[in-house]
Length: 162
Image (cartoon, rainbow, N blue to C red; front, side, top):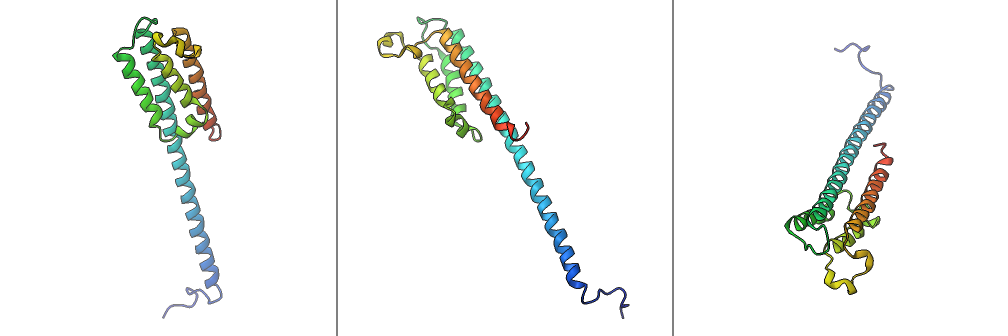
């Protein structure tokens, strides 16, 4: 027979159930918070990587264009097309930052930059002045787009302190 001192009294059973339930709920909440924090960290790391890749590709594209099309008489070449296609793909397939890019008009700025890159001098009368190619116009558009993307990144990470 079990000694009665080791057995809880019938009136203390609800207290034990309440204490165990409280521990279980507390443990569940702690686990869920930990998982949420881990998920947020993963999302932030993914966003940072996407922004970095986008900014690097923007730089590489402008570099390829300026080196391979130094003036209006030089037509587009393979390195330009390759760089533009890579940057276009990066703009299109971002998982975490696509909505921010589109809402901010960064995507539209990129589309306009593509028009500038592929500007054909023979169509000058049909092309708005701001979309006519010059290295100065190209660099100004790159600067504007880069600043916009950096602003989005800073805004995206401000809440998270990153």
